[in-house]
Image 1: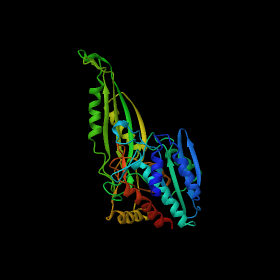
Image 2: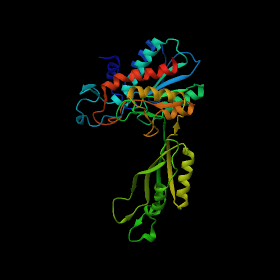
Image 3: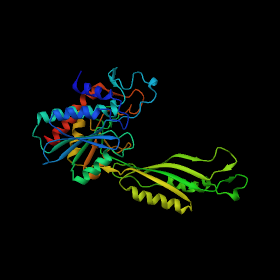
Image 4: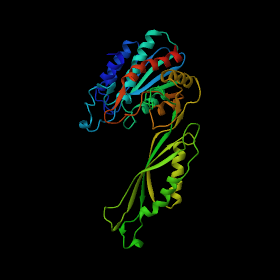
Length: 376
């Protein structure tokens, strides 16, 4: 069994359902310390975070960013094998977290060990940052670690996140940015009453229809660089008592905006609330800011990644800002250039999650090639 496969299996066998790390970071820290890394364990709330560094402060700091937590496996009887028993089948490694992202974390560590052994006096600093709060609320993980880094003046120049970014073959996509995410819980207030006497009530559904249509149909922008246009999606609407003869007193609406760098969260909040007020609504709204958008322009990190991925995939990678969010959104505001490079994402969060064994075996070489280009 190869080094990276053995380590990936050890990680998968630990049921680290978010925010429980289940001992993954202790295992990885022991290996990194043996390789000469200085390890700092940052326990914040119920979340484990690991910051491991190698090298002097002179020169650039490159961070390999990942997470040890996984989403719940769902009904175990739906899996062909136990989600926390790593299983090789038909050239695939099955198990919860195999692709998202314990395979990448294992590859990070193996690549880092090999790199510092070959280049003990490499330029700059190589760091590994891991959290157990990426798949959950993302409050006490990299978000808080970034705040801590900001307070103590920690500098990060380049960040490589191992999220599963490839589409059909390893290295066919290079993530160079992510949209911001802003969610809202809107409660529109009316007056409950009998449907036969609408003059004695105020129907919040009727009152809100114009505002909701305006939010949903608005063309927020035309896109930005390689970002698609900003999108607002209504995901849930609830009102009423279940009876067909009662006008409800309240309407609850959940919606989310995925937005490009034309916007920031504060401006979007103001725009949305102005549209609601313009309709004369009585409402309360609670906002959750998941993270601002980030974008890595052309530079040493992006050039190196494009050339390395082209070598591994056999063609130039698609350079994309699509997808959801990642913890890189908390590192980018520190001034870092951020990219995401990882295995194929077709099975992530699904029953029978898996990573191709060939891709897993290739990942340490891919990450190692990036380290060679940037720090050797």
